Image (cartoon, rainbow, N blue to C red; front, top):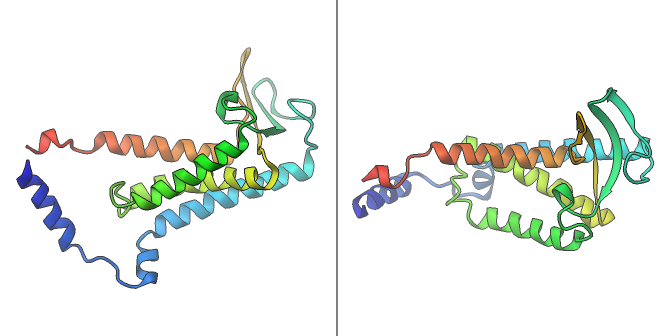
Length: 185
């Protein structure tokens, strides 16, 4: 096993690391692009919703997009998904900042030099920043996508939530497809 570790370490050390600040920034260009795209789409959609729908709570003002299935609403969410941690917007903002800091500090261990993982973490970071911006600005997150499946109403969500989900799911799928340390023996 130590031979495998040495081999990986020698391969990693043989890779030329960018030296200038610009080169280091461009090494993560997919992460930056996806984060900016997710953040921009999220904030733009929330501004559009806020300009057209008064914030009045759940389903008091809605637009039917697909009858019986998809609606646009304007909800202020002080918690997380499925009403977990309701009223804990400050705690959730601190968790978001901690998550972003952890991604930065462990970027090498997370394989963020690879384009695919940069896309995943770009979506995750952009979505996290989108919801964090709401929490810091309003003390709640703007949710507006409302889906109904028969009698079941899925929790209302936003573009940032979708980006976070896609980023985490993509990274988990990628992680599960990577060879394990056991198979390297």
